[in-house]
Image 1 (tube, helix red, strand yellow):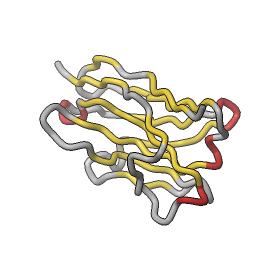
Image 2: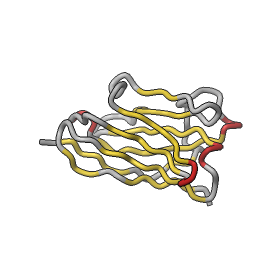
Image 3: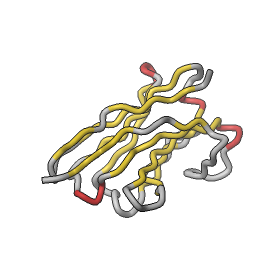
Image 4: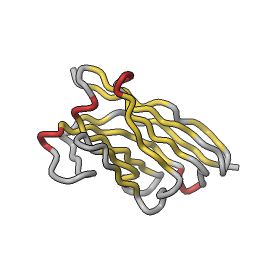
Length: 126
């Protein structure tokens, strides 16, 4: 069964850092494009960062550019989201999603047929 599981969320103060993990089981994550999305209370889910499977090119939303990084660890079959200088507006449930490279037409385009995790809560509060 194809599965991704997120971990690493928590309660932190503004300015702190966190590293979220998206660990895959049942498939090799380096054959998949991976995206991180977040959903704040009362808001729609939005894309945060994505990494391609072909050349590891990345995308970051303007709101996180310069603060967040996304990278692969193929030995651990995991994609990480490194979050620095966290702000209260970064609060939300962070979910990762994976799509096989053969199905990718554009980076950061995913749908409900892709492999989604359950999410991990990130709360940034003083």
